[in-house]
Length: 357
Ligand code: GDD
Ligand code: MG
Image (cartoon, rainbow, N blue to C red; front, side, top):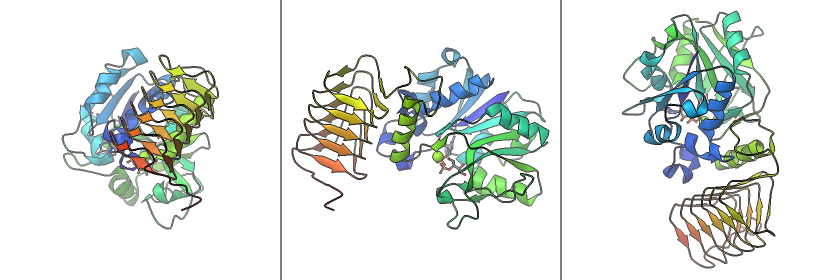
């Protein structure tokens, strides 16, 4: 069975991390988001995946190659202009080998989910659907595609990012398409599968079916979700066969240097070649490769970019530090602060506490 992974988005909400790497290539629990998803696809019996790339296309092939190292056959198709989700699916149609009536699985590339992919395909086949959507429930559905269904599970509407959602059942970003349907998406122009394709299929009475499930699910589109997802992989709440070490309270990658009295926990990841100084505390955070955290620093619920340098005693809580940025001693950053790649915060430049704000 063929699968398509959509990995061409810009990842705007994850800036500045996505200024140097596209969102699906950012490491969660030590390997790119895409690696966890590809492992799940492979474990479900999918053998061939076409990656639909656009933004920073080259890095995917550099990392995954022909896929043989991951037990898969991978192909890459790059859009010259971003074609949107539907345009990207249409753009890979010529590379699909499935027959007209056969299913093709499509994945958004920024999701962690425990979905049983085989069961989704099974549902698609037994329902004889044109499209089957994986659905999940979230507390606040306004940032997602809202998908009401009838009692039989047939989708009745698709409302992308609606301010007043009629249900908290949302599109979880994994679909099964009948192969022939992909050819009906207009070619050569941007198309949103959410705003154009799904609504027009529903208007035409084409059978679109929902597959709700309540396994682990997370869209890694925001910094808070990103650290949460990484943590859940490290601690085993979200199982992944791509995890580069044993499940536990922390994941410390080879080649890193951690002082014996540093406290690392809460599902933190310490990247390859990173260093953590004496007495430092790292809690629920992600240090990318070759980041360094000085003595006595405190890093909580934060992402520290590649080669970033965090000075002695610095406090970071719920912040994102871009690659190569330098935070000199005497700084405290909290509550959603973001530091751009390569920026230098001089000694004592920022002492922001949300309690005082
Ligand atoms: N190739 C390609 N080209 N891929 C794209 C493009 C494009 O122009 N635009 C977006 N993508 C990819 C992204 O890389 C991502 O993997 C996926 O398509 C979805 O894009 P996001 O930008 O992450 O969308 P979203 O999170 O706001 O909303 C989508 O996902 C939600 C679930 O997480 C929608 O599908 C919602 O309906 C859904 O609820
Ligand atoms: Mg997303």
